[in-house]
Image (cartoon, rainbow, N blue to C red):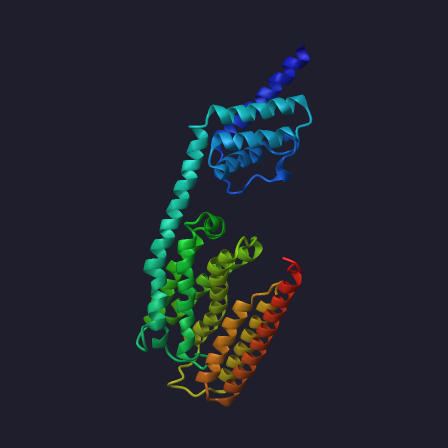
Length: 365
């Protein structure tokens, strides 16, 4: 009898701790997984309760979530004390469907709505700067910068327009249930940060503050790289997500690789209008072109699927340098060779991916 009361007291103490943690648990946007359904004695209490809160948010209702939650945990408990604790967990979910659970769901929905509205505002007021800069004519945006020996043909800046039209689809896609995970859970606030930093970068470039513009280009590239690799690591859920989420960030990541080079030469290089390309300038430009070509090839090889879109962007920019920089001839022909190498790898890799997809397809539908 003493042992029973002692065990009950211990279980009550454990439950009191779990209950306090339940009321203080922050939102954890990770769905309940089967691997997490292990005995409570081997799982930290706070982690268990975070999954409880997250599971309820995913199910959009306390009663629906609590039934499945109780079933999954009940099947994994090995002792009566854990079973009793599971019942208490299930009971508290039923007892407070309109308070803690609904409060959690409301907070999550409000946070998601705020992020979605912020993304819309940033797209309209900040990403529009890039469209204006790419289509506004010779006196605006990137055309108004000093010309370097790695500046491409003006038409290549239309890549901004393609990226921004895809981001328009991204802004719409985030309001759909299938787009919430990638746009809110994976990317989150960083989309807005990219828009603001890019706008500052463009305005500094237009104002001929080239060194400050280079600093902000580094900041933009770091944020975009963070998002890019998070998307690479995340699971792709649909072709729509591939087109409206993964593709624009792949294009943007590759384009920023080139723009970093261009921004560096703009900030620290010579002005083509005032200076001939000396041996040092030619050597630096050639090295930059070879680095861009190796980066484009690296896009096609960094995983099983590769990133053909990124390689195509690099190839277009190299073709733009070839078309624009006809003098000196060393830069002109190295740009052509770099373009050919990158384009060949992109086309071969793209064909191989299509072949692998067809090989995986069933012979009989």
